[in-house]
Amino acid sequence: MYLKIQLYATLPLRSISRLWGRLTNLTIPVSLRSPIYKLYSRIFQCNLEEISASDLSEYPTFGDFFYRSLKFGVRPIDLHSALVSPVDGTILNFGIVKDGRLEQVKGLTYSLKAFLGSDGLTDDEKIPSSHSHSRADSAVDIRKEIDESERPTGKEKYYCVIYLSPGDYHRFHAPTDWVVEKRRHFVGELFSVSPYLVKQLQNLFAVNERVALFGKWKYGAFAMVPVGATNVGSIKLNFDSSLTTNQPSVPIGTFSERTYRENGSFSNGLGLKRGEEMGGFRMGSTVVLVFDGPPQIKDENGTLLKGADFSVSRGSKVRLGQPLLNVL
Image (cartoon, rainbow, N blue to C red; front, side, top):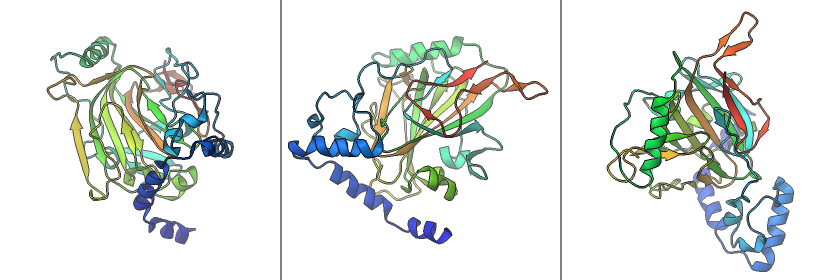
């Protein structure tokens, strides 16, 4: 088993992913589109009744079909929970960050600082008072809500990892009302993030290419991290056209950063409302949430009395908008 993993790690997965990207952008003859997409949907259990296009031939390339949008209303967004799922997928893991480490699977952990950068996840920056026009108005409103919300005494850092299979809807949305202040693009490997490989490869999420979005929500610091994988070299952000992932000229192990609190239309950060579409990626991948929340208080029997409480279980399927976390 170890030898197989070692051999797999030597494959040129970034080059393979770029080639796959070019292939999926080739125009498919109109007569072949429907049969190809239906076959793919049968294999990977895509629900074609949910997609926005009424005719499959409207998708000229496989990439367009994969990045398909959904009909309005098929993913109702829960308004009562603290967090909702930002994607359709499977819960790989969740819990409390302990000793600065996240659990990949039982027995395997990885460093929060290695995953998010040298400063990890902090809530030290003061919210600026500047005000600008356009989209920034939303950021000001959400920041005001954050300021006026009751902060818990003490904080705990939590995380949740959601895997998107090839058949899932592959756009990601805001899991709560929050303000994105910066993004950090880590150039990395493109190993598969399938549940099987997650159990085998140490530090998988900390070495794969990823885009970490940092900001604030009502309980403190908040980070949302789309993670790339084999054949998922392209991660798209609707609000940041400057982001380009899986570039051959950029060395692995480097990162670039952009702030959304610069002068201009995003001077207060980028305000996002719960359920708002943020971007997406191609083929199967993963989204990791890391965030501050109120600490858990339990009785002598271990029953949760107060604090953050995940409303999902490991291995369970979730849909965009489904409750992910409640605060008691």
